[in-house]
Amino acid sequence: MRCKRRRDGARARRVGWLLGALLAIAGVSHARDAVPDHGVIGVADRHLSPDYWISRQAHAERPRLTRAEIAEQNARMQATDTHVNGLEALPAQLRDADVRAWLVPLSSPPTRALYDAQGQVLTADQVNRVVANANLVAIPAQAPARYGLVVQRADLRTFPTRQRVFSSPDDTDIDRFQESALFPGTPVVIAHTSADGDWYFVVSPLYAAWIEKRFVGEGSRDTVFGYGKGDAALVVTGATVRTVHNPEEPGLSALQLDMGVRVPLLADWQADKPVNGQHPYTSHVIQLPVRRADGSLELLPALLPRTADVASDYLPYTAANLLHQSFKFLGERYGWGHRYDSRDCSGFVSEVYRSMGIVLPRNTSAQAVSPALDRIGFDAGDRHEKRLAVLQTLQVGDLVYIPGHVMMVIGHDNGITYTIHDTTGISYRDADGNVVRTTLNSVAVTPLEPLLFNPEQSTVDRITAIQRIRPQGAP
Image 1 (cartoon, rainbow, N blue to C red):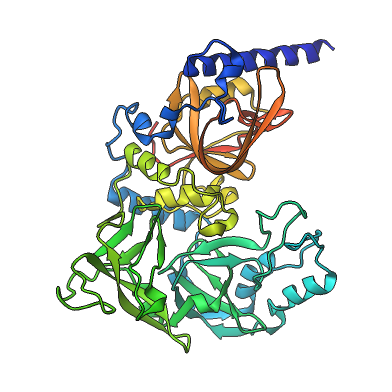
Image 2: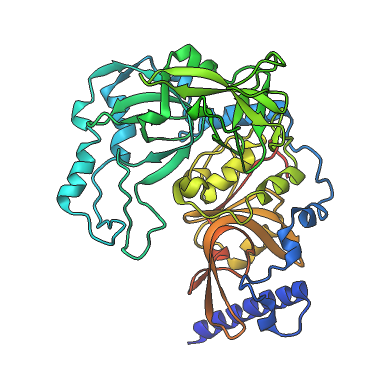
């Protein structure tokens, strides 16, 4: 009993310290008042503005890495991280073993019960049909690699099916067959075709999975890998932008481009020459891929309004830009695997960093262990006090990982670490010690130290790693 009392006493002191710090932030006299009416502990209106956090940085506009250093960082990522694919280095002939190494771990038969959108358990026959469409029996001993460009934002799936499935009948937000999404202009290697002929299994720079073939234009190796290599380009710096609507090329009309997407700029386009029936002087003329009726790739001009949030190059890697870019997603709906035309926690941080030209692996599990980043690892036995001490050293943009989730540090306020993250929700203890669960389902700002991972463990005590993108040897 003595040890238990000591643990309870230590926990009470930690809860008291956290509530006291939050009281100082909120400037109130009762602990329960540290939770505003919106139910997100420790968050006031000022915390929801990037300008507040920028003003607290001593050198917010100072570049952390030069363009050359970012190129070195990305090269190190591709060379050392097995989750990042060097497509141009893949062989011209794909062997059966190569294709199975990508496909089998992803599209193996599920071993747990899955539910459809009506809450009904998928039958064995339904599951077998989905698995059979992956067409593993038809993988040839060897076949030429085929190449393509993604022509619009498209889902990447575990199996070649649009069937949505869920782990429980009452949770239809997380589709267990949803893996990720690809964006217009992404190069892919086409490795296999589904039995029904409607899907490609593709390898992209950051992921390998199934995509509907209607979203891929197939072209030559040189065309696909040459796309976007020129100097004249635009980088999407808004959360999303859309091309101008036009009735002449539906594949280029109101096309969504997400943060960090880089598209060629047709800078030498004749100033008075129409694009899809519209005068171009109020827009940027860009080049985008389209898929023709026969599946072939064509590169065509499209218009992007001059009012669109874009830049002529990747943004400088600064604390100010990390904050500005991350807050452009504030309030966006959480989308598991990039569903809902939005993104999830790892997609969110990846796209913020991508707007500065920095490559991260796709999933949290890969990001958290990437050898290409400046990693601080934690063991289960690391003391709470040690973890708190490390949190106080973190800088804007540092990435904090717990099992299945990542948060981006935006600064400290009265000794509390604040993060922005794309999250389903948070839990914490109120002034009476009761666990409170607040559903968020959005990109949100929260303090870190008060959060609970579960009723028995704090989020701080479940941190597995912190990853930082800094110059080699920087403190």
